[in-house]
Image (cartoon, rainbow, N blue to C red):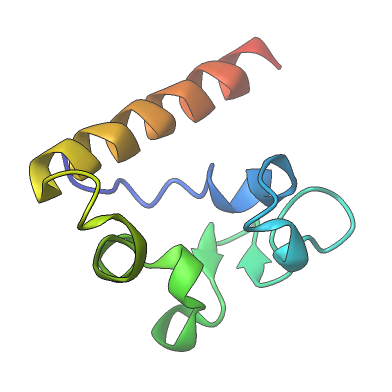
Amino acid sequence: MRCRRCGLCCEQVHRSPETAFLDGGNGSCRHFDATSRHCTIYASRPDICRVDRQYVLRFHTQCTWDEFVAINIRACRQLAELHEDV
């Protein structure tokens, strides 16, 4: 599963201590454009927003790349479920 670029993770930065610094005051990333559903700083986004970079920096000793991708897919699905409940 590839990223659908739906922006749900960008709308939920307040849920994680690792991304809370991006909160624009409403739970969404301050760099997220809700109209276009795109990141306004995508090319220079922080490492925490880069799945491949996070794997190299923090998780490569804890799991395989495939396991890491599966974890991210589960997180994405959970965000989608949360969004449906709203």
